[in-house]
Image (cartoon, rainbow, N blue to C red; front, side):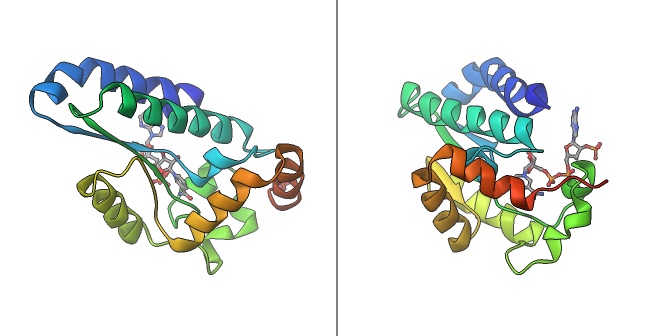
Length: 152
Ligand SMILES: NC(=O)c1ccc[n+]([C@@H]2O[C@H](COP(=O)([O-])OP(=O)(O)OC[C@H]3O[C@@H](n4cnc5c(N)ncnc54)[C@H](OP(=O)(O)O)[C@@H]3O)[C@@H](O)[C@H]2O)c1
């Protein structure tokens, strides 16, 4: 998971960098709202997405002007991800805050078109990330732990 979420995007970007620079290209890294808080029971997802987010923002600064780098941070999206993460019993994808994949994809492309450093799929995701940034990490972990119970 850590390799897929963080190392592979880093390696791909480095491999493609000469082409990206010669064509003034753009990098879109799919991070997550999970990057903004420690997530017990999804701990590697959260940690690897936090690494991807920080690396994206730092890389954007390093490449400033030559290549645009966007870290896109969706919240819960109605894809098979929750089943793969063994969290489908929580039915988070049925809640009001779950987004449609087509909407999320469209917002991600808008973020690249607008050359955003960090972008979110919905206003609620933006607000959630902002609040999470101010909440002490131990408290955020305790809150997330109370929600993200693994299936038995
Ligand atoms: N769904 C959410 O709530 C949510 C929220 C925030 C961020 N995200 C992020 O959005 C991105 C897309 O996720 P999703 O929700 O669309 O999940 P998904 O429906 O489970 O799709 C994951 C995709 O990754 C591919 N994949 C998995 N392991 C791989 C590997 N080792 N090598 C190459 N490809 C691999 C899968 O390929 P196969 O189909 O061939 O298995 C699949 O196409 C991910 O980066 C995820 O972390 C999702």
